[in-house]
Length: 433
Image (tube, rainbow, N blue to C red; front, side):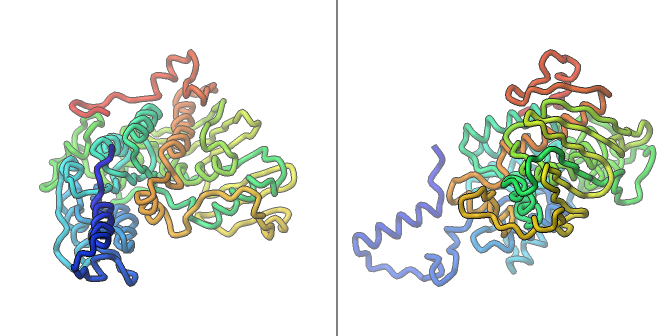
């Protein structure tokens, strides 16, 4: 059973006081009246990972929520840690934010209700599982690292009744929500093709390119903890922080970094968010020399059991649903919605039609609401795992260079031992799930 939360205890205490007629005056701000949120009713947050995205997107978003309170920040890099603490303290106008370099100390705190995980991809699932087992609700950046890790995460989240939000704003963005609803309600006729464009190449920060020689680990940076479950390799600055995305030990390049956004909309519109494709084949360009080895170019074709074909290629951010009666889509991140015939854009979704779950205020607001209600967020663990699986399957198909058959019900390749071995990865001791 989950422990009684402080906010539930306070509600019960107030009701009890009223029932027996205690002559005790409680300030309205403590009770959360007149629009205020009492300290005991705030959801306490520990933010793990305070790099650029961790602060700009996640810390700053929670600072704007009246019923949330960030009490802890954690990062393996002293500079990032200082920036995270500064952002929180300035946001609240105090000096209360605690700091840790070891994320395990965050989830060990009894006064933390939930954690926000903004680390490189290879840490997402291990930290999420540990936090869930410690009784914390979890919002975690996308994507998972492997299909096997995603499967294990689902088991733990279900076992511990964890509210888990895979962090992406797309389901709260009008243009993506709108196109998915139009498709799901048949406005383009029978869907047959989805075309997804993702950025090509790498967006490298810091001017790092080519082969990099090992260097001394900077003072204040816990490099061994940064590596965590990933294979040990000598330190070089272009490996860490933002640029981890381009190294397959930690991520899968633009395919997983951007694909977790637009492929989710594709799955949503295709009504396959709880399943996956049955055939995958693709071609990719993987650099052979240098530090960065994720695919820079890719063209992947997926076939679903409902007959829909999805093509994911490196070009520019875009998505287009094509059906028997027209198409709908956009070009560019949050680009204007387009359709043919244009009348599709004026279509009204009736009260008895499909209305897809969203939260216009974003994933952080949705997560907090669900922590209180114990309902599933709009991008829960099962749907997030299926979206990430599509990307991992595409990467495996490109690495093997052949068509793969996938059984989404069992989440198996079915007799393909070579492909099956690529569903998971070994973890560096002492880390495990």
